[in-house]
Length: 511
Image (cartoon, rainbow, N blue to C red):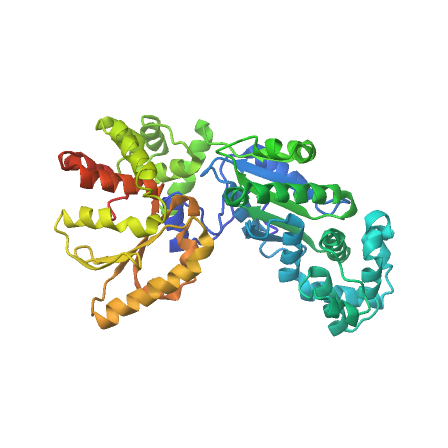
């Protein structure tokens, strides 16, 4: 990709799933263009330009939900996809593996085991002084001197591999260390091991940009885990001057508390504060024009940019870049503006009743606990009220078949995208049951998911069985809100004519 400069629009033939993602404001797997965010682009580029320098670098990208932090990380993945010396490794934060140093060590093992082993073999043959890769065994690096010398004591690939796995922790029992004549490594010594492995990579001209997204998931899991994560990040930063090169970008949704890092770990904030990069909503006219032009080109449409901009300016400002993209797409395709739930409720004098009902459901009947079991009762009532022919309404398996629209509707209540592989197995099994035992042979699939999961069409491309169907991903901003709307509909017959269009608006008329 030498013909492109970083942050230029990358020429690529977009797939149908890519276009579908952008049209709905989703983050596609491989974004070709980043509009605006010049400050963030400049700061990230400066660090990448210095990636071969004598220091490990770190940035934290923060943004409210939907403003494009993931877009930036995935653009980098695309830009450096075929680069010889720099590799971008994109991962979502693992709430169960919340020590960033151990996490990076695992990522190195997953992606560079064979390369590091071959590099060590080559360095051994060249009689390279391995001590220089481990800070000459000064300070805490003295604890891995014995390990480092053992790692570089042979050019036998199998032996190098065995010792390497002792370092990553893949082999960790005392008997494996005894077999190599080594003292068993402690977990805190893995910090120096990570430095050693990263220095082996840079010594051989390979550099990593680690992109860890959705760090807020650790905070959602546990305050204690998040605190440990930040402490381990501080320890990594303190080792930065011992690592030659490489770059870590952490992405964090900060909608709840923009001072979350500072309030949780002040010593870390003192080190990282100047390296926090904010992603902001697109507000400037020129940037909106650029975005409109890009979307017109992507969708192969000829609408007048000024007319689109005028229509956009007459409407309520989008609260995120994702919604802005979605609204421009709607204008380009002639769709009316979708109201926010709050505005729709207020316009129909139902806002207070909605809040009272939601509070009552939460406090008095604990309705939102195990919502995946309770959600389908009011949903079934809602669908029955229209005399829609519904086949195989199976709340336990979280799906139903809408005979009227020829659509298999499936619900995923988790916000964690890691569940999708398992959910796809369930969908495939249910489809096989319906199509072959019931002879239904439907054409459409709608998957209802939490919007914060950020599931996109590009992500689902790998599931071959879905290619036989017209697929729709229905983002639900909050299943608790939808549950409340359905309960309101069931409890208040007199408000049903008002509630029906609100529910349709909230679900894109997909129920």
